[in-house]
Image (tube, rainbow, N blue to C red; front, top):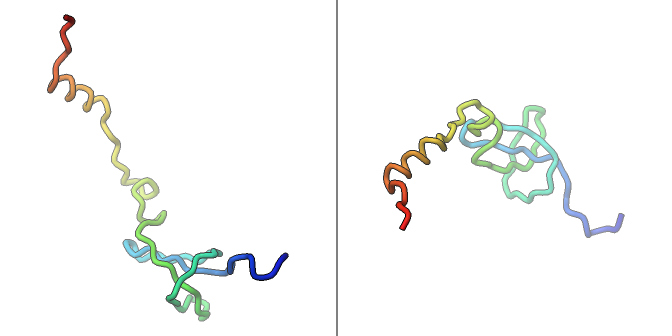
Length: 84
């Protein structure tokens, strides 16, 4: 491999702030903060808003959209168009 053309690929801790869930994976993302992991080593940390621990699709709290109700509501509001 050529030197100095590849990003720094290393272990990074991703921290879901909404559920306080942390996981470690490899990434090239640049961060300025570090955190001490359970193994006693210091890793760069990247804070995220949503992960699989807090996303409604993965937690089972997903809200289904009632599309049939929307169509009925539209027809009720605007009525059927009369032919000219």
